[in-house]
Amino acid sequence: MTEKTFYNFSLFDGTGDTNDANAWFTVDTETGALTARGTGKHPDSKETVDLNGQYVMPGFLNVHTHVTIDPDSFDGSFGDSEAESAVWAYQNLQKLLKSGVTFARQLGTDYDVDVKLKRMQKKGLLPRTPHFQASGRAFSMTGGHGDSPHGGWAVDSPDEMRKGVRTALKNGVDVVKMMATGGVMTPGDFMADPQLSVEEMHTGVVEAHHKGLKVASHAEGNPGIQNALDAGVDSIEHGFYVTEQEARQMLDQGTYLTPTLIAEWTIPAYGKGVLPDWEVKKCEDALEDTYRNFKRAFKMGVKFTCGTDAGTPFNGFDMTPREFELLTTKVGMTPAQAYQCSSLNSAALCNVADKYGTLEVGKQADFQVLSKDPLADVKNVQQEDKQVYLGGEREF
Ligand SMILES: [Zn+2]
Image (tube, rainbow, N blue to C red; front, side):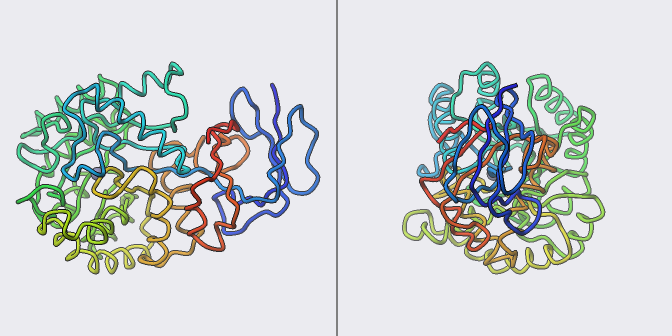
């Protein structure tokens, strides 16, 4: 075992709401795991790194990204070919890591390139990319949200869903994504449109759960959110119109909410006169309702995750840090509560909390180094030239 000790920094480990002053930790450079941690005088190691009084916090987990989508194309696509999509996805994974995201979950990827890129990553062929889970293409109904030539997997009965999910599992996905409602980016398709049925989704949930995999459901309005909950999904993605009764059901079932605040916020903020009026209007009309619904759900105790829907219009792969600002200003969280959506809740949702999320002994040394205190101001995580480490190795 080779040890490397980092010292002289303030540590927010992602579990509580305070910093440890004058902290140090030691990393096993072969496994990338933290082996010891403390404050004050640090132990002697073969290698030591002085972090000069800066601030250390866990790398972010972003549980909702689309690495094959171009946030500047505005129509949900990038290239027409698998080769273009794959190169684009690789570059976006690097951008996520540079912004401080050390673990990402892909929820709907053209040509299943995330599944294929992950195989390459395991062979060490994708340097400077975060750990990630891959969903491959997303399941939708024919003509529904996400039914695109290369990005969707249309199913129209429980049997088709069963066959589809089993095939996706055979292909090696880590998570299953399904569309319970319409969405923002397709004309004539609305947040309140129910799409996949309870029976279709439930069949997919049973198959995924048999393999120990989680199911994420795109669900923006009602009755689709209710349908997804009745089907037993593990996370409601977006959930803009979540009701009090649905929030109670989420508490009972242990369902997570991925609010993707930045995705809904960027469209009216930057899209006027650029995007079609119907698209801007759909988001603008929903914003105030969304914030009210989220505040209530959060107060009731629903567990929120960190997910940005990166790839949607103006919602780039460098923007994850800005989600925390919206979680504080729009939902009413403290900075520590906002970061815990990533460090605790996202890791639990992805079933990786034994290894990722917080900076506790035994977990991976995936962290960022900031010049200003992230607990004093959530904007401090938006620092562009932050240092980012994976397993104790500096990547950016
Ligand atoms: Zn999405």
